[in-house]
Length: 95
Image 1 (cartoon, helix red, strand yellow):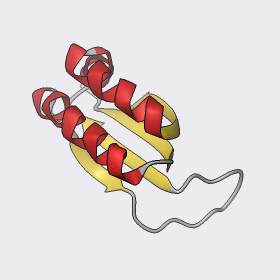
Image 2 (image 1 turned 135 degrees about the vertical axis):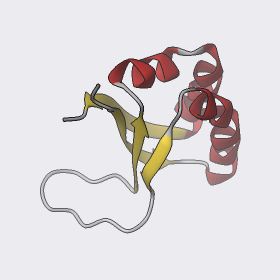
Image 3 (image 1 turned 120 degrees about the vertical axis):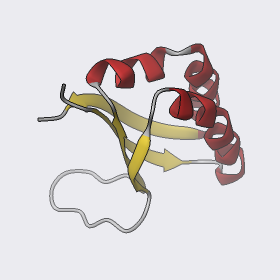
Image 4 (image 1 turned 180 degrees about the horizontal axis):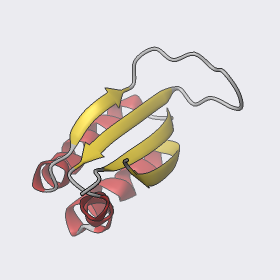
């Protein structure tokens, strides 16, 4: 079964409150088997607009990735993130 991946591009407006998001999201990530492959760090723009923070999270399956996002645990965290950051997020199926 192919893995699923969250790809998120984020500009954090309030770094202190963003820590609350990270803490709130942790239980959902643990429950759904998330493995962080990229979490911030240096990046170089090749094409198109850039956001300051880029994150890639691997899940055991596409369904696990979608279920994590839709879980009650993550939705609490998402509400915090949406208050303190601007983001684009997609879920993609691995090969």
